[in-house]
Amino acid sequence: MNDNRYALKNAFLYTMFVAVLLLVPTYVYVTYMKYVQEIQYEFKLKGQSHLIISAMENFDQIENKSFDYPRFQSFQSGLYDEHFSTIFSLIKEPLKTQKTGYHVQNGYAYLVMLLPERRYFDATYLVVGGKISYVRVYQDVIIILLVIAILIFIVSLFFLNRFAQRFQRVNQRLDRFIKDSMHEINTPLSIINVNIDLYNRSNPTNKYLQRIKAATKTLATIYNDMDYLIKNERIAFEYETINLSHYLRERIDYFQEVAALRNITIVSNIADNMVLYFNATQLQRIIDNTISNAIKYSYEAGKIEVLLEADRDHCVMVFKDYGVGIKNSKQIFERYYRENKEKGGFGIGLNIVKSIIEHANIDLRIESEEKKGSTFTYDFPPLLFKSDDL
Image 1: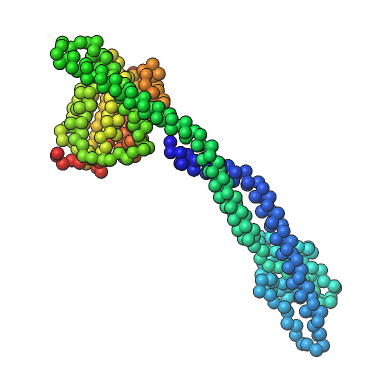
Image 2: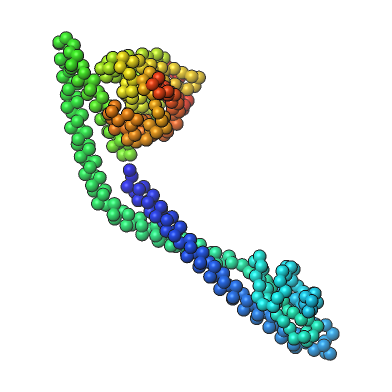
């Protein structure tokens, strides 16, 4: 796993967790700030009402024939009689309550004041109102939360990296140990295979040596899977032109001895000159793991069929066995999962296959029935399949 990606992922998750914990105090804070803003707005409305009353106080009905009612850009006001009928009003919003005091409804705040009886144009009530907005409150909350989230993310990322350093050193030692062990395993396997081949050239075939060679090939498949896992995130797998027909025949020949160990026959029907643009290492992991599993889960003296053909502009590769079948065709791709632990292995082969085909957009169809066998069909898209002859 990439250490930086791991730290980023966990820092993000921790930040989200803290953000969820902050929801309750944030809600309380927003409610409180809205309450504060409403109080401030009430004082503003009271200030505007005093200006209106002062203007009416200063109006002299004898000297002036008409009263120039005060108008404000952000506030509306009106005069109402004792039945709350309009005498004069600039308020467009319908008032749902006629009680004196401060009221807020649907983003509109208004103040109802009781006037001295018949003192100002026979008005009993003065109403001053305006639209109250909480945008500033929400903006402040968003800015505060963003700052907190960024700080938490940076701090958590810093500490995660600090905490991870010790484990990184342990992982590095473990990687070196695995690489050295893999090298040490590969060397004797190669020596065993070479010496068996040299012996068979000058001596009659020995069934015991053949069994040893089949076992080393099984170990080699596991070794190649482990080697791929180690290199997967560290190197780029370059694509090249591959004669799939020739390559598939070679891999079938490679597994003949492993299959013969259980008297299993591999029957192939491979079309000639099927060409892929793919990576040879990844192609080997797909083929080897599929054939290896087919052998592993076939019955003694069973049969495995391999088919390679062109389907219009697609390349189709099919592996069919008549073995124990699969109980859960989705779960088999989980790393370390094994349906039958008695069969051995580490449960990483098909997980590797899944990662390869998903990255390359290769379609895999699985048909399986318990005690009757399984069929794996790989459908290579036109982008990877080259129909021209080599």
